[in-house]
Length: 143
Image 1: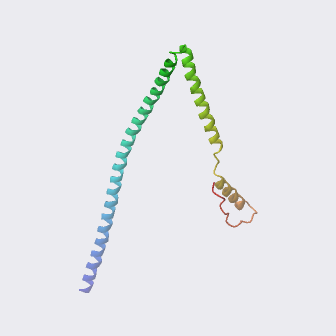
Image 2: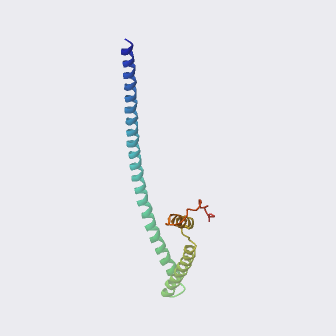
Image 3: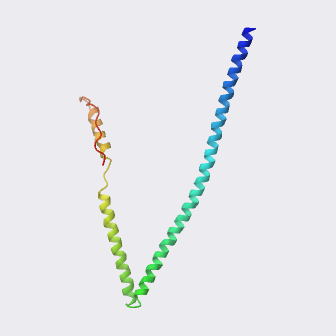
């Protein structure tokens, strides 16, 4: 009788473990499905939003073009038309030159991954045949 009771306990424990495992699997599967639905919904919303932002940017560029043409014609009230457009073009050229120079200067200040390259060189030296591996390399100062 004790053996039968013990078998029933072991069987019920096995059933509980099996049931818990099945429940966890179902929970994880449902969670993954929910995550997929949420990501798809967010991706659709983000895609539509990006399309609207691209349209706004395009219309903004058109606005700037028409504004510049308007400024040129306003200048043409006092000057010849070609002079009004020439002044607007000259101002645009100056703005483009300034932006280009500032961008170039900032780009020159960009440095590569100096600490990573130093660590890579130290690793190469340590792994080269016939060399004794040095101790750990201390990281350099952060920029």
